[in-house]
Image 1 (spheres, rainbow, N blue to C red):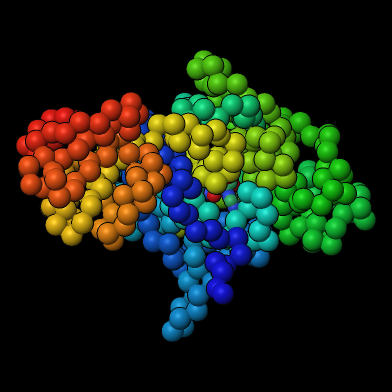
Image 2 (cartoon, protein in one colour):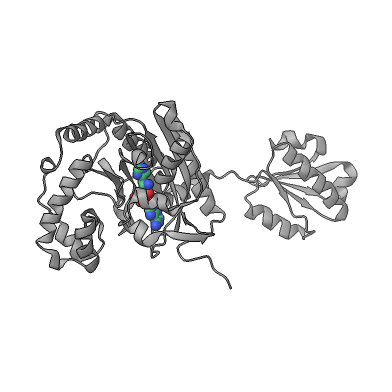
Length: 415
Ligand code: HAM
């Protein structure tokens, strides 16, 4: 027996309906905020992620699923931002000199140890707003993320924000952290001992309980590392969020696991998810476009993990109630009735009526059982009698009412 690879899942029936429903809701909101869809390849060159996410991040060091082919090293994309910016530059969208708002929905791949809410293949929906450093955009992007959750009835989520400042500030922040954490280096796990030297921000993402405890209540003030511009930007983002009634908390330890971020960073968390409690996350990355070969261009975005969103929403239950029923099931008794039923089935479908029949010549009892299972609104019964008279028997499954009608009257009777 073959099974799907660990951390991946087949989606069948209701599972797929829920996923598509969330995609549809997200798409509608993206359109309301004037974002255009972009689709980029699932495979990208490994070096794209090394350059953008950073060589020392967990994603690049440990989680990339790599394909080596004829001297090329490709990876299954672990996230979409780097690919979107590559596409933005490769397709000369930067030359239009306009502010570009893009959204995407699709699978991402990370070779992680699977657990609840942590998969190797997972779906993300996200946006990238490229070409503006306005703090209104940071707030708009956070508002958009929050509106999607509200629209699919997710309650009890928390929005947490922080700022890393510009590259200079970020460097200062790293030095301050390094200084503080080096004084208690012995406490940390071997990975964090290395991280303190290589990329100190990653210590703040460590899942090891001792490391987590050691970085709790760090005595750092944003003023210690932020320049005036970045301080003002952060204050404006907070003001803008307040203006549009978006509640948020601040956490100086929120630094995000990918290296491209500068200035505003945010995460949207839900306590019911347990250890993988981040539903979605994002922030500014004002240096990435330049880093990938473009001119200096500010940008901000976010992505949500759809599987995590599904875990915290009651959408599956709601969809069950809303699901469109099968309009008609045709039950046929005998060979000739089946021939007539087969033609009728095609005719109904051509008239945009969702219809089904059992084409295997089963008993009436079995056909009625199928109609019930499919939640059909009407059952049409055709036997020799009806064939002779050019009629069908129409049964309303909710009321149980049954009547014989002419074939020509059928569509009117069921619409
Ligand atoms: P990220 O924090 O790596 O950011 O991922 C965003 C979301 O994807 C997470 O909050 C989580 O819901 C989901 N996710 C990540 N890894 C997994 C996994 N293994 N299994 C299930 N869900 C997962 C990014 O990807 C950035 N590109 C976001 C961004 C866009 N920043 C700016 N623009």
